[in-house]
Amino acid sequence: MRPILMKGHERPLTFLKYNRDGDLLFSCAKDHTPTVWFADNGERLGTYRGHNGAVWCCDVSSKFLPSIFSVIHFSYSFIGPSSFLILNSVHFFLLMWCFWNVGDSMILITGSADQSAKLWNVQTGEQLYSFNFGSPARAVELSVGDKLVVITTDPFMDSPSAIHVKEVARDPSDQSGESVLTIKGPQGRINRAVWGPLNKTIISAGEDAVVRIWDSETGKLLKESDKDSGHKKTITSLSKSADGSHFLTGSLDKSAKLWDIRMLTLIKTYVTERPVNAVAMSPLLDHVVLGGGQDASLVTTTDHRAGKFEAKFYDKILQEEIGGVKGHFGPINSLAFNPDGKRLAF
Image (tube, rainbow, N blue to C red; front, top):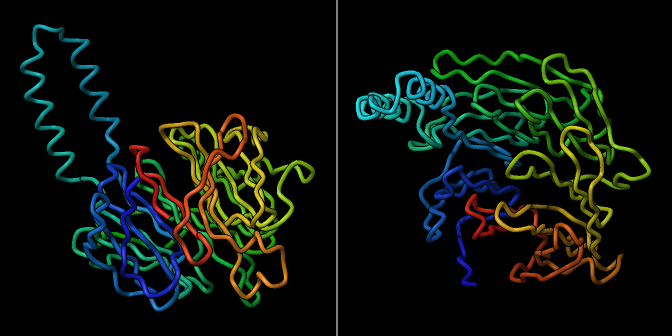
């Protein structure tokens, strides 16, 4: 395994995200400046300047062409194989139009401690829009199809934590800051919020150690994790599987848990000897990766093993530790698998 060292941030990393094609890696840090890199060689392509606080999270748009593919399938089955060459040329232009107008990785969204979530043009670095709040924006994720975004905001002053759903306009000049849905009520900070299957639900987790599933249209609470089988301390991270059928949570209680995304039933538990700050699942193999460790200032008051900074690999099915990767001199705050499953960033 040959590691690629990417140098550029001046303060600790907070989040990592590959685009869907896996050729670009986006990083967030406490230095206010999200950055994009070539995934293959670690070359820094550019930065996105405009935030005035730590950037906690990001997401990037991706191709989503079900309508085009359904047209191809319907046309072919209706007209028959004899017309394939004509259809092939017609749909080539349809696909090229879609790629030209939608493209891959056109929009980046970032959430920051400066009380804003910003939309960026991936290619030019131009800030397209800023969603402004009265408290820090913690987590962001674009829906399937990139038409909606879920944003969480921290409790601040008299404002509780909240989950906001906003529309993402195709034309930035039409962008609005109005929320389609706002959910208030969870105690403490919401560290992660992601979309459930078909964008019908939102899964959230945070400081109160409870995983919740919400109806994304009404905001109604549908399910929440059982206190006996769930986490005992702050949930720091949440990562969905490649097929979207289950998700993994990491916690300061020194464990990670695998959940069914529809029923919120607990599937597996992975126990480690240090607080878990980041989790990831391989899209290629049955591997789970946990990253963590405590800040140096806290290690003297706890078990010395909690201060080790390495990514631990576990067998997803057997729940056994199968290896580890060292290299960091501080806590691991983020993990991300390349969509090809052959590379891991942390």
